[in-house]
Amino acid sequence: MRKILYLLAGGGSSRFGKDKLNMKAGDETIFSYILKKMISYELFSVMVVVADEEKRQFIKQENIPDLYLAEPGETRFESVKNAFNTVTPGLNDIVLIHDAARPNVKKWLVRRVMDITERHGNCFPATVVTDTIRRKNEAGTETIDREDLFAIQTPQGFTGEILQDIITYNSEMSNVTDEGVILEAMGREPHIADGDRLNFKITVLADYKAFLELSRNI
Image (cartoon, rainbow, N blue to C red; front, side, top):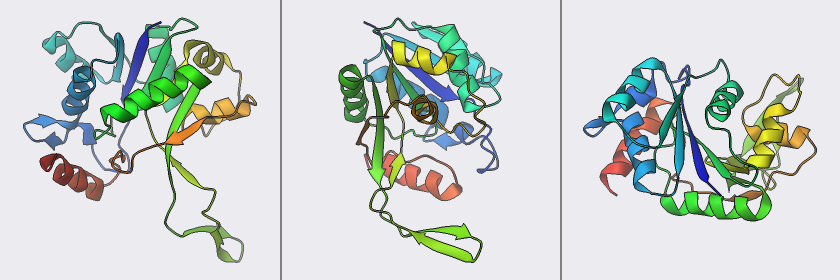
């Protein structure tokens, strides 16, 4: 049974305004920071990095073994599919899909996702929503009960068999934010596990500043 990582680093960073993965994290970029961190955990037998040409050239220069490269797609799902086609898992392999814009992921969380995926077939780390949430309606806005709400994180784990089913599932869905959306459309239950509040995604400048402050104090 192989442990495979698909590291997604090909997003457009449209909300950030520029490629956030090229922003500095100490003496390196966020991209090299998360890549080296995942390698240092020594949990994966194979890694596939989905990235643009500039980042792929950086990886080639580093000459990292057991590392495969894939081109990003127009959507997240297409990027995952490209990674899948680059290194197709066996039915019993464990695949973790991680967004490189979450550079503060801890080794214990990666292990937890792996272990739960092996037992349940999939795993989605999440944190409970503590803010008051309001939603637009015809009258203005309305408050949503937050008691049953979760904020989903990555890495997300799948057995090779389940990920293959997700990839081959014929769906006309256009708003696929992660593979859990497709899993649910297939009639299967995503397995939710405790995530880590410090494993936040860098989306806006304030997130980047929070990450820099956090990384300096670890």
